[in-house]
Image 1: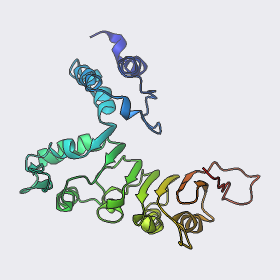
Image 2: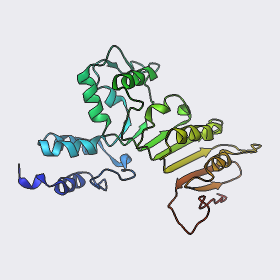
Image 3: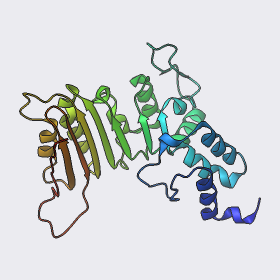
Image 4: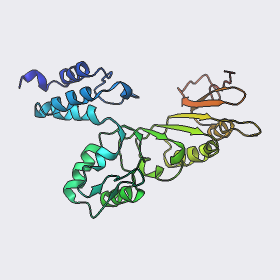
Length: 260
């Protein structure tokens, strides 16, 4: 191995050349473009991880920073049984060994974003891992929490950790009526959340208080920027990161509605 590979910046350049992720070294960027990843991209990272010890850590870090589901992570546990059919959910059959738990934690600590956290996994599997780790959250470095209509309440607390910084809520009515409740529970558990994106689509005819208004009332006085757009039947609104400005007396920097 060449001595130059001991320089972290060079390793980052190598990874950036293989996959143009906008590598920042600290892995704190908001998001990589996961949609542009291909199977070949991941094979390149895996090959890089197997090249030598110094390349292994950074390559695996990039490989696991964002995953579509937690199934690959759970498969690191010997007693995990993935779904056997479309109507069955993955579960853990038996105790978790110390070696399995150590391996699970090593890779779990690399995940910053997962597109579908609760997909096809029984909540009992997560509870067993939490009990074995004696902790209250599964992914210690997860910083973005995506929520779909089927994930309003069940299992969300498994992923609220001290590093969580942003929440994405996607919904179709009538599930949208639970948006403010979900957001309130998350902010109660984690007051360090800096960014909230809410996207709600549906027919709001006859609804006195839209989810946008509910979220606005919830977030008044919080350091958050709200933007919205609306048509006769479709509302889409987002709550985005507020940048502190001492010249502004109101924390609610912007609230804008436009017809689309």
